[in-house]
Image (cartoon, rainbow over all chains, first blue to last red; front, top):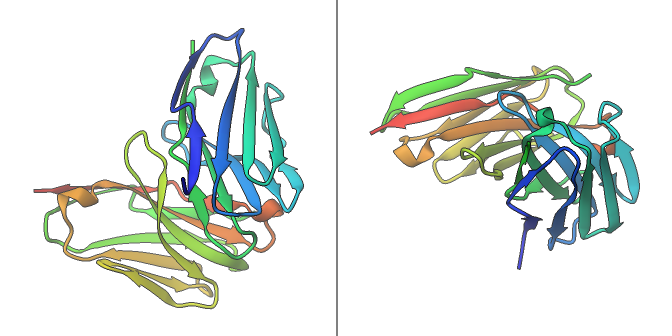
Length: 112
Length: 114
């Protein structure tokens, strides 16, 4: 399998649940990213793991917690989310710093 | 702080017309600029990547130009088809950006009518 794979494709969760989004890249890239896409808003960077350096967007609430156990796998752990967290969550990878990004198909998250 | 703007926000053309999509960015210190296509509810598909030292890139009916000094890029799609209907996003990778992050524009939503 090639490219960037995200699972699950769709997720519905209650506000008290705990769930995780998974991303795997088979491209040998050295950086992975989580982006959030809400309706009618530009894509927002949430987290970066690049050359083993974690870079955070300080506006991301602590109910989102990333984990990058190795250069091929990235997780986004979710707990006590709010309905406004419903969005499309996109994972991407790149060979930093000069190569372009490759995106996964996304996880459509609905918080009820 | 890098800001990326795409004009127009939406575009509707009859099949066969050429499409011209514009992207502007405020900080010219970039590694590259990338154009993506997004279908409703789907992920992003990379169309073209232009390195900062390049002036343009071509792939089939697509051609993208980059004028780094003026902070502009244009995506041309020749002889549009209904299958070209999608949202097109441009993004820049800034040299000063922490973690080599991409900064995205708001996108241009394109509808090609048969």
